[in-house]
Image (cartoon, rainbow, N blue to C red; front, top):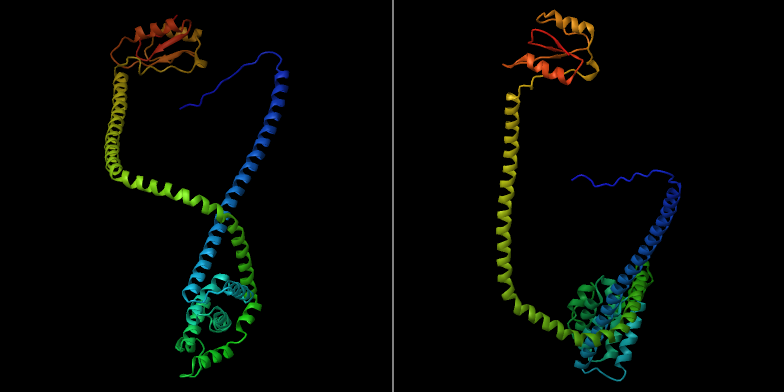
Length: 368
């Protein structure tokens, strides 16, 4: 489709219009720059808001996970009969000491669960936790695995602990096995905490604690909203479940109808394309046929600069010589076919009055 356009012709003094256009150009450029800066500012604010929302969600999730871990450990302590007035403070002190030794609060809680269950006492469990931390760094395993091995050794099953620290004697008492493990791995947790890797782990854990603290501020909001939101989500899920058996057949029917329509449209487009190609071919053949029956199809005229009658041309025309050279500045028309060349010459001569016209098959050059 050709491009649409509008041409305006201005006649007269257009200097004022030029000045106005130049001024408006500056205003429009300034406006565009202002709008561009505003759009960038809005985009930046929107992007920052999105990042803040994502960060808040992540922090809230971390705080919720931390709260769930605390509840699980407290339930374990209560199940073991180890809950006392000091148990909560003892757990918090153990977590803080573990963080100083490059263990997260989640790792410390997982280790305490096994030890509290085995010992039935939070104070004893926190004392054995120090040995488990050294064993974990010595053997290169996580704290939960080391704490479980120490807990089983405390219960008389020291095979797992002996696998973590080779060279310990078999058949020793639980106290002797734990004492030997404590001696063999002594100080390993503190050495790791002072290393570059340990310092990095402590920094990462500190940042996680900040996130959990911030997220805990949003937990009350989440707890207040979710009880009202969950029934709505549940009702919506039930509505979708009820409607799906009805909607699926309708969607299938619609899909089949659309498929049929697409097939028909494809066929129609193909038929129209064929028709257009056939019409083009037919029109070309008709044109060829008209060219064959056109009596003037073989008439050739020279370019206009060569048109012009002269006395020489007139003399040549009067000579009546068949095949004589055309007069200088005249027009030569070669006529092919069973037609009257003289009639064609006279017709052309009337149009080009005053110019010599010579017919290729005529017996004379006609001049008017």
